[in-house]
Length: 105
Image (cartoon, rainbow, N blue to C red; front, side, top):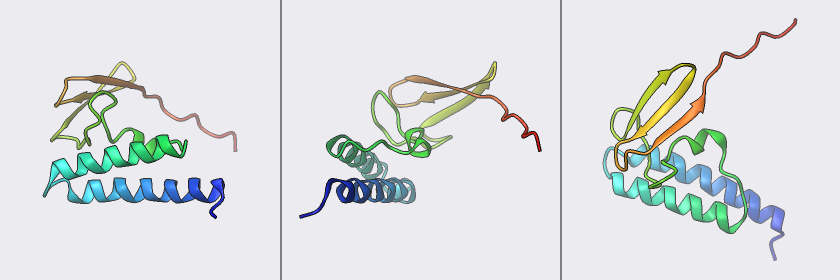
């Protein structure tokens, strides 16, 4: 029997693989990349694993479509805010955008 920690680790690896495959196959089959995103979300919910921050920005929070800048996503920067416009459902997502502070040394 597999322990819960092992299950979570396998789920995290699978989520990462699904997002990479979604990115690779998007030009050939966008619907399949949307399916990969939905599978990754189901895995994260079933095993209570958080989706990594770099992958969270790759799908719409409303319609759960895979987002590709210029094709399914319009990106703007306004007043130190990164704005994502989903072209499928016209959902707007805002992310704070600020320069990283310089280290003391």
